[in-house]
Length: 400
Ligand code: HEM
Image 1 (tube, rainbow, N blue to C red):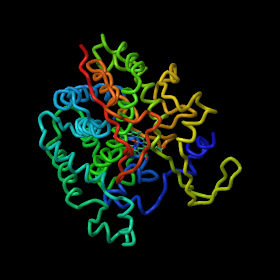
Image 2 (cartoon, rainbow, N blue to C red; image 1 turned 45 degrees about the vertical axis):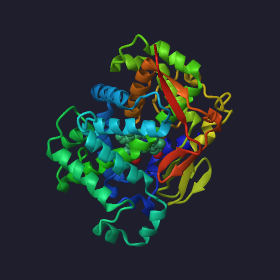
Image 3 (cartoon, rainbow, N blue to C red; image 1 turned 60 degrees about the vertical axis):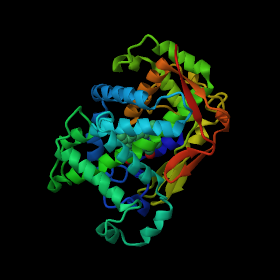
Image 4 (tube, rainbow, N blue to C red; image 1 turned 30 degrees about the vertical axis):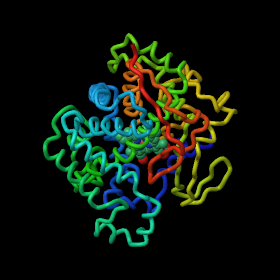
């Protein structure tokens, strides 16, 4: 598979997703983001963060996610029809705030609503429209603190993360508190192999929102919608969860929900992958010049009948026996591939699993009036958010 040759075997020639100036449109925080950082700085940030998603940590995080589900169930699951993406966005935001900042939605409702408002501003930003500002030299944009989204939103996020760090960020272990326990001095930035400077912590905290919020909500919304249209799959899940306490250890054993998540990402592929050549090289006999950008559309593999039997049918059982998200699959690229793949894949699976397992234990998921069929769903981008051309309405019916 050529793409593996590029991203894994050829990683030394393709270490970034691209060095375009657009990487810096989000302002002076962006050079510190793991997505943009390169070389030893990227390695240091990534190596420090990856253990935060270990099994032991996720077991603690799972308690936060369970609380988030309960709160969401009490407040937002009604008999009214809801649009699956808007509905999922509310849950994933609260999950990220809980797991990332220990910001409990139950106790801090007003603040959570305010974060939600600002997140929507972030995601609704006309990113492509704002690229015009890139004519201004980077140093000047940074000096003037120019960002592609309103400066009031930039200030809001900076202030809130700074406050959390200052207050000692009490509560359950969370990503900001874990990062805060690995602070290094600015002077160690080029020598340390672990840890973050204070600015890097603020940057990663905002990045978690940006990289994790819409992606997780999109996958969860497609899954909820697909389940509303496939009662037999829902029933298979119900049989696995109905007599289960859904603790972290028990959830881990329910592999079929992992298969449903994988199938959702295969069926509704919304991401593309990119790598830039660091030097002249050759891939599969093709000469690549330094600076060339390679783009890969996982969609083309995910919907190819050479790799998937009956690819236009939503059938999670195709992953029976190969449910886990090890990133080792030859033909499944839901979270990317190689050393630049998504570091939070395990968190995303647990967050979605907690919701799906709990909701199916308690409710039936039904399609709303006049919703399109699964294979009629078309995606579109609004700002940087993934939406669908027709709403994916669903409703919940309490189980007897
Ligand atoms: C279902 C949810 C998610 C999906 C589908 C997803 C998908 C992806 C993909 C496709 C990439 C690019 C991989 C590549 O180029 O090979 C990526 C990178 C990344 N993701 Fe995720 N992601 C999700 C959730 C999250 C969450 C929750 C976070 C943070 C808490 C996160 C943080 C990141 C970061 C920091 C990178 C860049 C890694 C690097 O450059 O080294 N993602 N993600």
